[in-house]
Image (tube, rainbow, N blue to C red):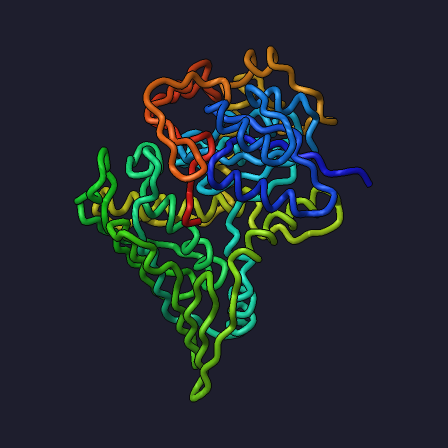
Length: 415
């Protein structure tokens, strides 16, 4: 079998991590990198012996076997749309969007195209998560307490609600996804934000959020999130079931059952490798261990947005864990009305090469075609743009995105 050819959209911190992992897997070749900051794409491409290309259409013109989309939360949509329309397997970094509209539309396209997808909720691959599921099997969960207590990551868009979605959506989504994976579906949330942003320039997100969670199985829980520290203090959750107490984080699991207490160590790097390996093996037809396809990530995203909505509105919010077939059907009809999908949700045969001209005519301006203006600063290995404008026709009739952008990828050093 020849090498699995992978394209990379985005060249910031998270994209760099995926590129490093992919380069360490057998028979995987990174064939193209694009970013709204050409210099960032060039650095990453040079590091991995591949080409930097100007846009998503150019990535697809390389006929990759799979494409990774590692962009800031507000930039999701156009790149995924182009990849799915080309019929190429898609890996998306979380969060999958900053709202439900974009996520629903991409989920509808995934369903219609029948394309293999995965989302970067790598916590499900932790050894601690595997052991926790074994211990919880057959037990009634009663109480869950999740937390993400951290600092503001050093990227300009992160503390802006309209760019990141806020700490619950951008950071604590990992905890919420693990809560769903281990304790079941949440059906109602009631949250409060402190109304005071963290002490960084341009911030308008809550510096602290607290939420209560009510589960379909009768359990109750809490989530606490803050970004006002100067360090990553804690990210994880505690689960209490009949006769069992669990404390779970990226580094491991502590369990107590009666008088017996023990630990299970986890290496977060192992989980980051496992999520990429599972996707590549699925693309090759060698394995079936994708734990968070796009439709599953949509449920976690819905929960995170419900917490954010409840905090903003000051009232409880009901969560429909869905697959939200009605919502996806409406999204399919909307796409079909614009002539970009068969009304019946048919699949695309083969992976026709998408030319730059066709992509521009049919899709939104995608990452890499964006004009970048303003002052850019370098944070670590990734360039962070001060103000960037994404111009051109917006996918699904969405307005052009303008504002602060990350290096196409979003440097997310803590996830």
